[in-house]
Amino acid sequence: MPIAAEGVNYVYMAGSPYETKALDDVNLTIEDGEFVALIGHTGSGKSTLVQHLNGLLAPTSGRVLVDGQDLADKGTDRRAVRFHVGLVFQYPENQLFEETVEKDIAFGPKNLGLPQEEIGRRVREAMQKVALSYEELAQRSVFELSGGQMRRVAIAGVLAMEPKVLVLDEPCAGLDPRGREEILGLIRRLHEESGTTIVMVSHSMDDVANLAERVIVMEHGRIAMDGTPREIFSKGEALRAMGLDVPQAVELAEALRARGIPVPEGAYLPDEVAQAVLSAVGGGQQNAG
Image 1 (cartoon, rainbow, N blue to C red):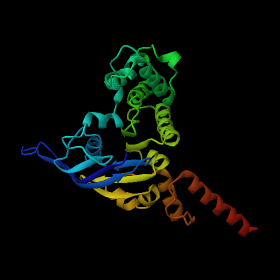
Image 2 (cartoon, rainbow, N blue to C red; image 1 turned 30 degrees about the horizontal axis):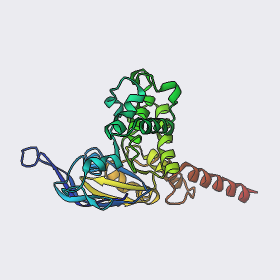
Image 3 (cartoon, helix red, strand yellow; image 1 turned 90 degrees about the vertical axis):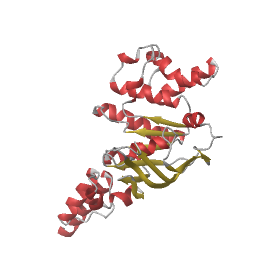
Image 4 (cartoon, rainbow, N blue to C red; image 1 turned 30 degrees about the vertical axis):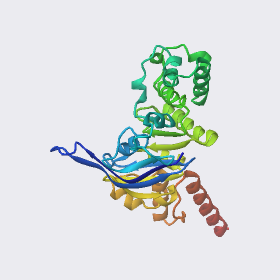
């Protein structure tokens, strides 16, 4: 289910003294099975863009197509599109409200009018995907869970709709290190095992480097860069000029090069940098011998 944005512009509070252009001529296509990370400084348009991907927001001009269907067409069932393109907001646990974990996850499928047997299957499978035990937690109150567990319940509620595309806006915001690790592992498994298309907004360059296959950089409502992590993170100076960080491995690689250690340009993963250091050390020892 590819998603395309064609010349998308979006203006908040148009015609008022507070008019703000949040998206400016955005053009992109996200293909089936991609893992795309959206990065950019606060106010760059990331969250506004992802809310266009399932029709939650409509462009001021331009169009968004999901599986070839223009979301603005009268014949397009935008409600159905939202079932196929699942959007997980920041702090989604704040939207949990049902009495039990099972009922909260079942809320979406129930609204689809599915038979109870199918709802039960989806709830169990969604809980399995987010590594929550149905037997232990299904009848528990969501408000008795840890922050990481609540976040996973919220994601399971979206997965129970069986979306083809999962859009996550800062999925690790506010979590402790253990919670972050759990959520990132979940996202990786969903992509690798289920082939789910992932679009992830993140401020963590390390998370992006470790997970994404493609990185889109937003600046002032426009797409400033679009490429592989290696291509994007090799442009450290340009990213810093936009107010962005680079992965820690990139910072280390730059520091090592400054000391004369030959770390390859474009190295952005810890293992790559470590291997370059080991090779340099090994070569130095052989020369000394």
